[in-house]
Length: 272
Ligand SMILES: *Cc1c(COP(=O)(O)O)cnc(C)c1O
Image (cartoon, rainbow, N blue to C red):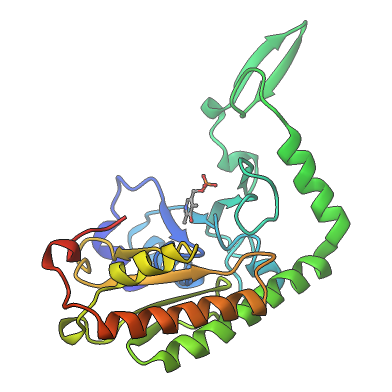
């Protein structure tokens, strides 16, 4: 939480990272509030700590679905941003982006000056021969779909996620943690009462896997590890019909688990 920053930030802090699209819950961290708190810390203590935004998952969602959310270089505190083209960017696996606010935000010692075939070539990339096809592919997708195309694709994903969220809420055993509105096109939830449920989310993941669905279950990070959650990401190409099949399989699996044997304690601690 933003107010906790002052417990951690001191004169040795080289930067703070805010996450736009938290892996666990699929929500956005409050980047602007982090920035405001760092502004206050600078005013009070003179510490000028830059903010990096890890927008691996949200970097290609927020500009299209939440254009008024200031999480990027509109905030003067933000010095750098990364975004994964291969997640919600619709580019092939292996392309990610890192942006710096300006040249002064990129330390000169990260840049290699290569004297290559007779000229100075400043490069920040990994050196030597690497494929550039994914970059070209993402460039093509930008041109092909445009801003409005990206918006339509991801609005459809978000609508599908919210449709699933409504069904998950009605299934009975779950409490929604995120309903697909306001951040990633995704849903996350937990068992409302794990102690009196005869099965675990891991059991549910296993049954869904038998039907071809990879729905991960995992504990939250240290300090909240007793809470196990499950999430569904809705990507480009997953439509209502498909998510309807998932919801049907979830209802069937829950019925099966409710009728089945009591939970085997040795499996309760298994996780992916
Ligand atoms: C996926 C992810 C990464 C790693 O990104 P890659 O493009 O897979 O290297 C970093 N941070 C967050 C929050 C992520 O979701």
